[in-house]
Amino acid sequence: MGVAVAVADLPVPRTRRNVGSGREAPVGVCVCRSATNNEGMRARAAKVLLIGLWAAISLAGADARAASIEQASCGKPGEAPCPLQKWMRANVAAKLADGDMAALAEGLEKAARLVPDPAWSSWVTLAMSGAAAAKKADVAGARASCKGCHDAWREAYRTKYRLRPIPR
Ligand code: HEC
Image (cartoon, rainbow, N blue to C red; front, side, top):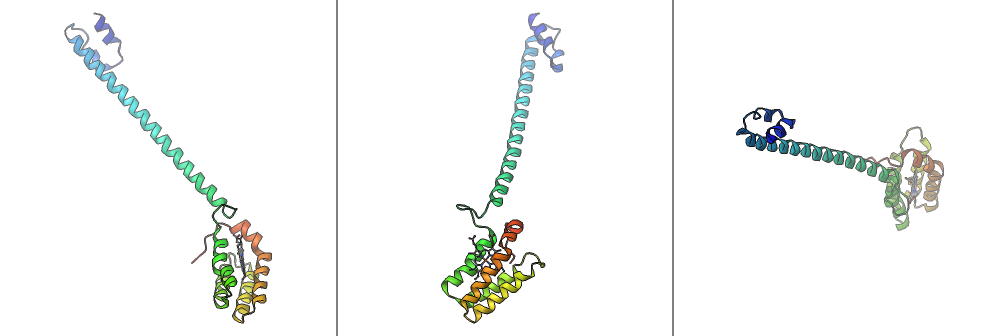
């Protein structure tokens, strides 16, 4: 009797069919237990799934945040250099330091093509005049184009285009 009541009290519809005959009651308890266990397992599985989902979503969010933080803060000491910064060092500054005027001229001609906005027309003329000076081995003239462009455009470039990848 006690068993039957206990079974009847359990909110699993399948087990209610077993209530009524004393002999079936133990089976009912058994079925009922396994049913509740199944339900518990399903609930647990759902919970695990939810936690997994939540973890995946929050991890993805953290990844996106980390990536944007990383990109937004290039160029400071200890951080990766920004694209044009890195490009300048390798293609222009290094050539000037080596005294390789032909390579410097080539670098400055490329720099002219890196103008990020066609409205920045003096960017192009400064870079091209530097290239012309480098071709004549006029180091002072080449240097003047560095300073001219840096004074005119470096701040604006950093503000608007710092993360811009170098186009091929
Ligand atoms: C037409 C424009 C232009 C010319 C010409 C130019 N630069 Fe630049 N350069 C820039 C800009 C813009 C930046 C800033 C990039 C940044 O910080 O993201 C820069 C950055 C640099 C940097 C990186 C500095 C740092 O923060 O580490 C070096 C080095 C550099 N230039 C060297 C030179 C030299 C040397 C020349 C001349 C031989 C030269 N540049 C000519 C536009 C120019």
